[in-house]
Amino acid sequence: NAGVTQTPKFQVLKTGQSMTLQCAQDMNHEYMSWYRQDPGMGLRLIHYSVGAGITDQGEVPNGYNVSRSTTEDFPLRLLSAAPSQTSVYFCASSSTRQGGGGYTFGSGTRLTVV
Amino acid sequence: TQLLEQSPQFLSIQEGENLTVYCNSSSVFSSLQWYRQEPGEGPVLLVTVVTGGEVKKLKRLTFQFGDARKDSSLHITAAQPGDTGLYLCRTGANNLFFGTGTRLTVIP
Image (cartoon, rainbow over all chains, first blue to last red; front, side):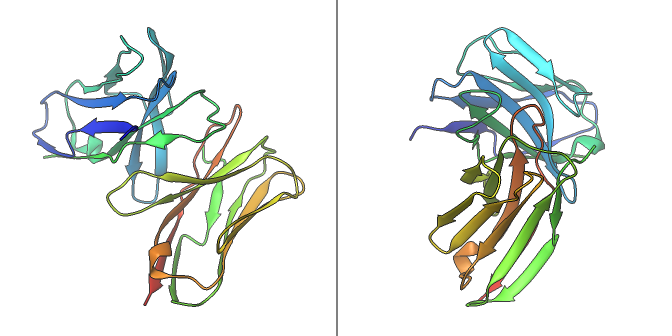
C-alpha cells in the first residue's frame, strides 16, 4: 500500500547511544518532515526537507540530524540519546510544504531512552 | 510558540451524544486542516477549509472555518465509539503548526 513507512516501531536506547529512525515514502512527495509528539505538547517539528539534498531545522532540532539523499528516504539520526528524547516520532510527507492536500503520516516510532 | 489553542483538551461522552471542539488563534490563516489520530497510529487528514465562513460536512462531522479565518470548530453528531481519538488542527501557508489536540473518548 502506498504511504509512509517508519521503522522501527519501538526502540529502547541507553543514554549516550546513537541510532537512526528510518522513513520512506512511495508517493513521490517532495516534502518530508519529522515530528515528535509528547503528552500536552502536541506535534512539534524537528526537521524538514523540501526536496532531495535540501534540509532545514524546525522548532526543536537540537540533538537530531537529517539528510535527504533521495526523494523517497528521510532518516532521522539521534547523535547521543538523552532521556529528554523519549517520545513518539512521526514522519510525514506531502507534495508541498504547505500540504494543501494534507500530510501523510507514518505510524510512528515509540522511543524510550533510559 | 503555540499559535493554535484547542479546547477542550479532554472530552469523554456517551455514545449518541453531540459534541463540538474548537481550534482558536489570534492569527489569520489562509487555510486550516483537521486530523484524527487513533491510538498507535499517525494522524489522518479529515478536511481542509480555506474560505472564511466555509462549512464542510463529512458524514456526521461538520467543520466550520470562522469568518475572520482565526478559528474553526468541529461538530460531531451522534458520536460513535469509532470517533474516539485525538483531534488535531493544523494551519497552512507560512504558519505551519499543529494544535495540542482534543482527546475524545466515546463510551459505548
